[in-house]
Amino acid sequence: MQNPFEFYKENLEKAASILGLSLSDIQLLETPDRILQKEILIVRDSGEEVMLQAFRVQFNNARGPYKGGIRFHPKADLDEVRALAALMALKCAVVNIPLGGGKGGVAFDPKGYSKKEIEKVARAFVGAFSNNLGVNIDIPAPDVYTTPEIMAFMLDEFEKIHGKSEPGMITGKPLALGGSEGRDTATAQGAVYVLEELRMVQGKEAKDLKVAVQGFGNAGYHAARILHTLGYQIVALADSKGGIVRQEGLNPLEVYAAKHEKDAITALYCEGSVCDTEKLARDNARIISSDEVLTVECDVLIPAALDGVITELNAPQIKAGIILEIANGPTTPAADTILEEKGVLIVPDILANAGGVSTSYFEWVQNRIGEKWSESTVHEKLKPLMVDAFTETWKLAEEKHISMRKAAFALGIRRILESSRLRGR
Image (tube, rainbow, N blue to C red; front, side, top):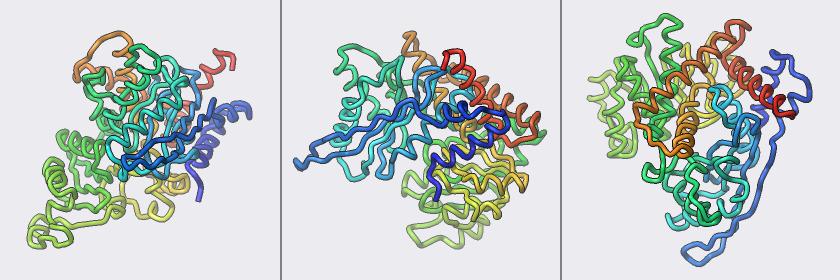
């Protein structure tokens, strides 16, 4: 099976052929500026000492300081982190913000660690890489299994080491420490702005579009909620434990309440494995698996959970005409080819989910200039950023008769190379 960085290189080569890039250009875009890897030692609550692998990939800073999340996950490895760092560089370039690409990780399962132990990991990570982080150098953020509270621990450790206040060295912080209003909904809100532009370009009405969402965490839930308020029909929702299909439409607020109470979307109709068949029949609804949501009857499919879920095996069964990638890397290159041949329009992750990093950029700016913006101000600044990114990607795709993924890659690559040349790289 290809690793995530091979996927990145495959998409890069497709875009490179469109732009006619030289071998040196391709090499620059395939090669991280720096790979940092260290072992960090923590003492667990039991007194046991454990050594964990930690890494930070600083991929490209031609357009500004490195920017990207830190994930705490047992399967985090350099190939995955390197691919995500490269995609962050492209993502920042696509939405035209002055940041580069980075990503970090610690290979462990935080679910098996206490809150105090996780704090120790967070502080040890910063201790290991503190000389390579900073407001003008590399700005981390939350990612898989990291939170605003963990960002607070990291900020505190960094400021203790350096002996000064520097809130802009990390984003995704709690509001009390300089975090930005609107950050919790930013990824979803940015994706909605993009989908709305696409809908209008295609001359469609929101009420006529049926939407299925895989993933009901922060991004998936907020995307479903916002689209529902705009008049889209949310016909399927799923999390890792299963989902619900109802062609007449679901109310994401009701589904969220059921999930919040019973920790499963299916709790709207089921107690564990026992479901209320009468209620399901009355509502014309049915229970499905998380994977089945990808192939339900809908107009817009939103993968908002894991990477690599749309493959050459299920791509032929996908019925949606539009795929809005809120998750990072949900579609494999092989599936991409199949879907493109079917005429499915994919709005790629480096455009669709860029609202998150854009709002992180806004947080960084607020910290640097000492301002605090309201949520409405953040949205006012986010919308034109996402609309312009969509418009430029769409225009390039139309001009070159290529997919939006190829166009977004080409747009980001062109901007990175332009900045690299101006810097004499």
